[in-house]
Image (cartoon, rainbow, N blue to C red):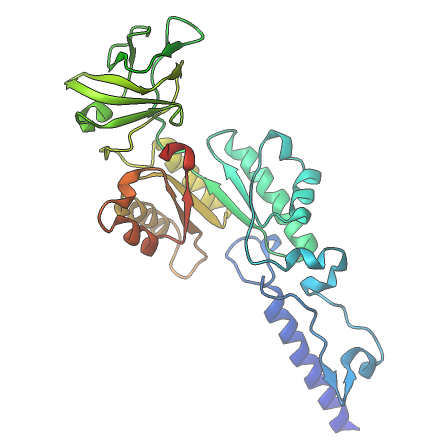
Amino acid sequence: SESCIKMKLSVLAAFSLLQAAHCFVPRSVPSSSRSVDTTLNVAVDPTVNGQSINSYFGAPMQETTVAAVPKVAQRWRKSTKQLVTLGPASSSREMIEKLFLAGADVFRLNFSHGSQEQKKELLMTIREIEEKYAHPIGILGDLQGPKLRVGEFSSPTGEMLQKGQNFRLDLDSAMGDNTRVQLPHPEIIEASEIGHNLMVDDGKVRLKVTGKGPDYLDCVVEVPGKISNRKGVNTPDSILKLSPLTPKDRSDLDYMLEIGVDWIALSFVQRPEDIEEIRSIIDAKIPHGNFKPAVMAKIEKPSCFDGDNLQRLVNLCDGIMVARGDLG
């Protein structure tokens, strides 16, 4: 009858809308980036007059929910998310797909290494896998941030520093030895005070400032170890007068916004104003109402814990990453 036909059409329309609502999360990025709702764990199977909708209409309906992929259905049933950094050994489509099926929820693209074009190729591969399994995959672009490093040594293997010995960091570009090395960052010398600690090579060597001048820091070795060419320096006790966004970072940020990453991780966060700075850039680049990537603050500096800084950072950003190495 006509009424029966209308009822069938109404049920079909409602079911189609239900599937569409659960299956895709809109983004302002290419259509290949469509994603399903991560909370959906079971296939929807509505009934009509006590019968499943498939048997009622006499033909199976195409399932487009996550559970329509039975070989990996259990893969989705977890709340804790796993973030995987892609590197040279894990950049092929085959390996990325294996990592996804093994449980990876977010892939991290480290902009400290490789070209922007390589990162776009990885992103497109991830989006194709996302489309294949009708399941969202997060993509996080990680900005490099300022790289604070010592200079180079006369010995190609570096120097072994002993506990209690004196060691100088200065602006002199001469090759280093067992008594001194260049520190080509006047902002570190300016911000450091007597009693401040300096972490070298992710804290493998720790120096304490015992004296300073306009172009040098005198230190005593607190934690002994080997120091060699271009090792990183972290200043846990000092707030440096520099932006967390270098010219390279600003170029990489523009590129991330262009290709459509889901998250942006900001390195070298020292204070809440650093998050405000990157948000203002994102807001200026992306029109109001369009999809904007979430911002993750990388906590690498103890200054983040001064006063109410941490609470303000949490309020300003969408996620927190704890950098254990840089915190020493």
